[in-house]
Length: 110
Length: 115
Image 1 (cartoon, rainbow over the protein chains, first blue to last red):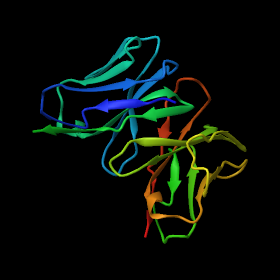
Image 2 (cartoon, rainbow over the protein chains, first blue to last red; image 1 turned 135 degrees about the vertical axis):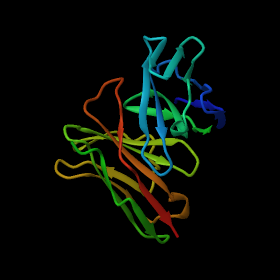
Image 3 (cartoon, chains in turn purple, cyan; image 1 turned 120 degrees about the vertical axis):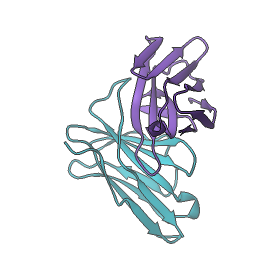
Image 4 (cartoon, chains in turn blue, cyan; image 1 turned 30 degrees about the vertical axis):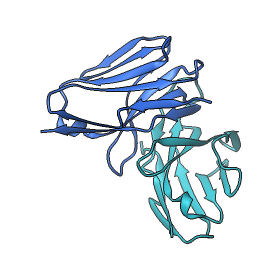
């Protein structure tokens, strides 16, 4: 089955700096790579996703890159704000069965 | 359009009791997924259902756990004879169609505590 590794587990950045979270996956058949943001006690919410036929996708301050050859994908958040503080999860697979990473606790310091 | 509705939000059970968690998907969604989240861990896939069909239950423990999505009514995740290790947040998600790619819409979760 799919195995997803996510790093780092915790990340602190100053407000306005960039944050990068990286994930690797093992199953070359995976073709869907979403990123979810989960605030404490809340539901995971999709913030951006990328499909295997695309190498990069950007949505305002958030971007995701995918390297299918190396089986890794990354989340980039620029100009971070305190409200970006949350746990971020990467996932790989298909909508039918997603395998999630273990999460990154991002703290944006004012 | 209401989102994915889960209840109860919090459930406390003693060891050996049964827990029933309910999930109503978003309107127009016919696919339901259950995920389990242990404290400070990621989401683990449990089961994928369509109306009256279990499509993939490869993540479900072989004993004590069962899931259904009847023709009428919500999806139910049932845990019999609960043990302390079952304490977790159980998230339900739904999607409008089966495809290899597509957003999952999550509910707020049901937090089970086993005493």
